[in-house]
Image (cartoon, rainbow, N blue to C red; front, side, top):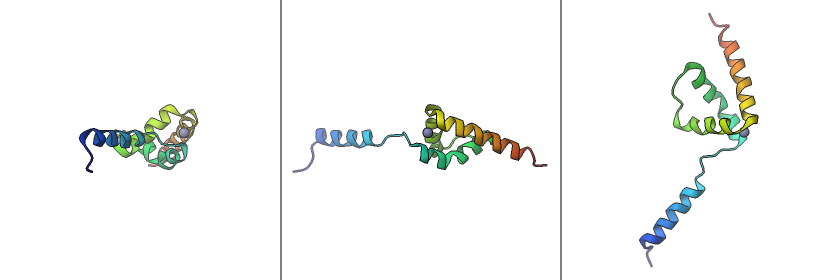
Length: 81
Ligand SMILES: [Zn+2]
């Protein structure tokens, strides 16, 4: 028996529910340098990196890590001629 529209919609919304945009700290840390780069050069944050940005905004631990990383990147780039 083929799926009717109602079943299909339910199925699709279930898929959407599981496709959370939230990521975990380890994923955030893994992509953090990439996000930091975008902040340093003032470029637009790519869609893939927006999840990292969103996590940093909601996670105090990652915010701390991110600020440290920015400090390091800023001080090392200021050494450049
Ligand atoms: Zn985190």
